Amino acid sequence: MSGKTQAIEIKGLNKWYGDYQALKNIDLTVQHGERVVVCGPSGSGKSTLIRCVNSLEEKDSGTICVDGIAMVGIQSVDAIRSEVGMVFQQFNLFPHLTILQNLTLGPMKARGLSRAVAEERAMQYLERVQIPDQALKKPSELSGGQQQRVAIARSLCMEPKIMLFDEPTSALDPEMISEVLDVIVDLAEEGMTMIVVTHEMGFARKAADRMIFMDQGAFVEAGPPEQFFEAPKTERCKKFLSQILQH
Amino acid sequence: MKLRTTILITSLLVLAGCTSNGNWGWYVIDPSTKNGANNIRFLLNGFGATILLSVLAAVMSMVIGMIVALPGMSSNRWIRLPSRIYIEFVRAIPLLPMLFWVFYGLPVVLKSIGINISIDAFWGAIITLAISDSAFTAEIYRSGIQSINKGQTEAAKTVGLNYGQTMRYVILPQAIRRILPPLANQFIYIVKMSAFASVIGMQELTRRANELVVTEYRPLEIYTLLIIEYLVLVLIISFCVRWLERKMGSDESK
Image (spheres, rainbow over the protein chains, first blue to last red):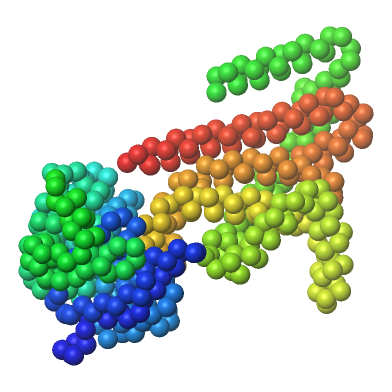
């Protein structure tokens, strides 16, 4: 990993769903170790943007380059996905497998690690998210917060350089939000490069290097969190912040 | 199950009671006489062929169905198209005409392109049943697989699994619980449809009943026994299907 390449470089990204343009000419550069928080009203294209980074959504035009790998063709997509971990709003754990099997499936099948090595690594990450004692349970036996922490550990088991979080706390009961955010903050403090789509503004203040506000498929405003929260430049952003900070 | 048994026994009693009015001739299948016992043995010997035919056709149908179903779920319409055409086409052909076509027509077609094989009644029936059923099997697979949340595929992609691995380790183990019960149901359908194999000379339950009717002239009694034979066979399978459904259902809640 040379210091010159950026973690993520997106230029002129466009995404259409039929006649509806979900992303309009997006440019975004994320440096290694940078923590970017993306917020904005629903339907503004935040999730679509990060789903384009690991090609869960196919771009219509523009260039995406992740850790020096240009997204061209199927092989590059595989290479990029192996660098990028993702955590979903709905956790998306594999319900028929135990927690431990959820964590070892990727390392064993995609990376070819032996069961022993994969399980050792899995336990190490389960300890980091503080649920090693649940390893042999099925996902449905865990609380939402625990499931999301397992999902984070599952991504980390692939040892990604970049983590994408797609509204990781939106499906959680309020009392479980902080246990998940704490794990993400820890990761941020260790220097993990990440893009987080979230409306948790307390978390954004604490962990973000840069805030991006999106609306109707475009960046409306971007900047460091202090400036973003204290002195938003655009009316649209001010209104959005006042609405979500009321509570 | 209790109700079914009651109905079955009651109807048997009613039918047996009819012997007194002279229209019935149960002697053709009376096991206490030598001729009757021989006839029964002749009829029951069809079970093996019917079961073998049904099982082989079901297995082939499951394999063909999967081969048809997987491309049918592609996001690319050109990959999807052949699968759709196959399903719509096969589903539209009634079993009996297809059976005639495979048995009498297919060897001619094969011969014209240089493949000189004859298709006997056994394989003709199996191929026809399997193809005809595979369209339905494919749809069962498709609905089962598509009922699994899209997030599962996405999560599998993000942990580096390819298409085959995602299917094998993530999607199919979950889908199988929803696929197996309707698939087993479809098997009952195959068992019943296997009776059509009699028209091309396959020596299964129905064919044997037909042949016996020709020599004994007692269609009422022989076809009654034939229906009971199918009834018993299907009841046994349907009992297994229920058991399977219960087992799958309780697994799902775990």
